[in-house]
Amino acid sequence: CLQFAPVWSRPSLSMLRADALLTSYFSRTLDDGTDSGILEDGDLAGRPRGVAVSPSPSFRDSVDILILPEMAFTGYIFNSRAEIAPLCEPPSGGATIAWCRRWAALLACVVVCGYPRRERERSDGDGEEERLYNSQCVVSAAGDILAIYDKTFLYATDKVWASAGERFQYVDLPPPLGVRAGLGICMDINPEDFVAPFTDFELAHFWKNSGVQIALFSSAWCNRHPDDPPDHVSEEPDSHETLQYWATRLIPLFGTHMAFVCADRVGKEGMTTFCGTSCVMSMRKHPT
Image 1 (spheres, rainbow, N blue to C red):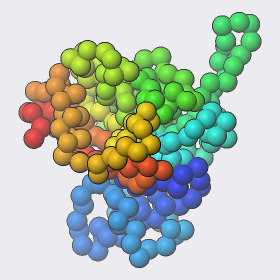
Image 2 (image 1 turned 90 degrees about the horizontal axis):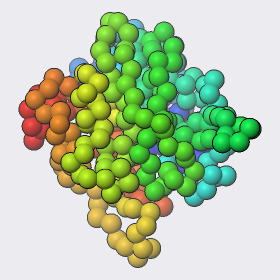
Image 3 (image 1 turned 135 degrees about the horizontal axis):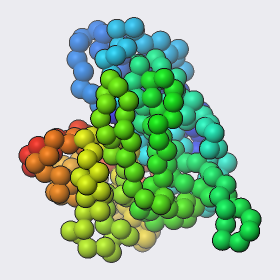
Image 4 (image 1 turned 45 degrees about the horizontal axis):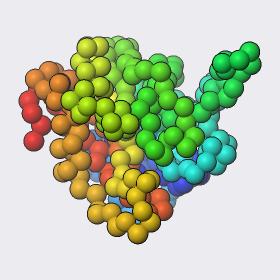
């Protein structure tokens, strides 16, 4: 999991930050042999952001999946469609998919990343309209786009600009992994619009019924709702509380062999603080 704070509305700078973080991680692991599996912004201390990317060949085949947060390189909070539209990438693939392909080739692994995209689709009339989506791409080590998933349950911040995806989605990852991966983005794990019955567990039931073996979840979990009054003071994020909530939303999967893998961003945008609760949870027993 690559956990970091992007530079808001500056994807190229965010990509340099991610490059530096990954390179720092490889250098540290080579030096002391440690490997937590979660890469954090603190690992950038003392290292330049615009570094050349050249992981050691020893890391090829040592990473199976690299997963990044929701809207990993653009930042998350946008106040209008016009504000985010220039950052939405074309269907054929833009800067985010190019970045994923580069790292997938360097590490010989699958790369999963959240990003905003645009798509021209037939409208209700005779013409077409451009729709914007909060999406997640899955890129193979060979550079193939295995899946593009559009966030199905939209958070209030998304509804300012994004269209909802049609349905939840999974993807069968090619050998040597050969597993079925469920996809998901942040709000997808909640009850739909926060009004559906809590025990519907929509995303968890979809993953279970689809035979998913690993869930790949990109998130920008935050401590403040857009409808909170301006004078509302949010508490600092509590990672333990967030983990407990996610585990509760995954109750239908307890006792299965599925793993839940989440990349969750950190940092602040305006008055909103992001939780940074990247994790790997086994569903074999009740997570604690």
